[in-house]
Each structure stands twice: as structure tokens, then as C-alpha cells.
Length: 201
Image: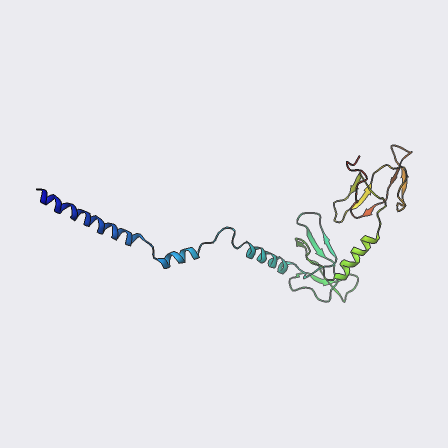
């Protein structure tokens, strides 16, 4: 009886070992398959640069002009824009390329574009605008209470009541609520500049 038990136990162990080997061999993925699976995984952060570049390229191709110096845009965000440039030939993406009103030999693209107008055509125009803005001096040295439009750059007035207006102010009038104080009623094309006091009071 004891001899029979000794023979049965090794046989059972051998069968279990063979079964375990077969299961592992059948369930284990090959090295090549694993490598291929890893190669096809795309993390959420990957590909963002490619998407952004494609979006920018799509916007440039969609605009009815390649560049624009004189854009007419709404105040919405993003704006609706038209390019008022008079050119010899419109871009291929322009659908309404019509003769300019003031010069029939030139063309104007009358398409509206939903988005920003894009880059300017000439650096000279941008430089001239910048120099003009720098040369134009504000009608006040500082301002605590500025009233500005929402355009860019804005048109601003300074509502400060002062004893004496700055030398650049052309319309220095008595304040409505206090005739002993003065208010500069000039409009300035640009930001109002620095405040007179830290807290604006």
C-alpha cells in the first residue's frame, strides 16, 4: 500500500508540471507582438504640435488674402474681417475680387473672413504706425480716471479734475461739478498711460 502511494504522488506532480508549462507557453505573448503593440500606443500629449501646425496652415490657406495692411474688423472675438488693400491681383482663395472704387486698375477682395486678418504685407507700414504713435504725445502726463473705447488701440479721454491741464491738452475746460478745477476733453488714440496715484484716488 505504501509503495502504491509513493508511485501515484510523483505521477500527479509530473502531470501538474506539464500542464503548467503548456498553459504558460500558450498564454505568453511573443516578443515581436509585444514590441508591435507598444509601437502603436499614442499618448494623449503626443501629436499636439502636429495638430497646432496643421490648424495654423489651414487658417493661412483659408484666408482670402496672403497678408493685409489695412484690415476692417468687427469687435467680436474672433472678429469678422475684410482686407481693404488695393492689389494688382487677389489671392487664389478670394471669391469676390472686384475693382477698387477709387482705382479701377487695382483690385480689392470683398470677402469676409471669420478670424484675425493675419500678418501685414509690409514692414514699412507697421513701422510708420509705430513711429506716429510714439511721436503723438498724450494730452495728460498721467491719468487716474480714463474713459476708453474697446477698440485696439483704444480712443481715450482722461476725466481727472486738475488744477492745470498739461501743455499738450488742447481742450482744457472747467469741470462740470467744480468750476475751480479743469478737465482735459481731448481724445487720445492709444492707451491712457500711467496713473497719477498708486490707488487711483
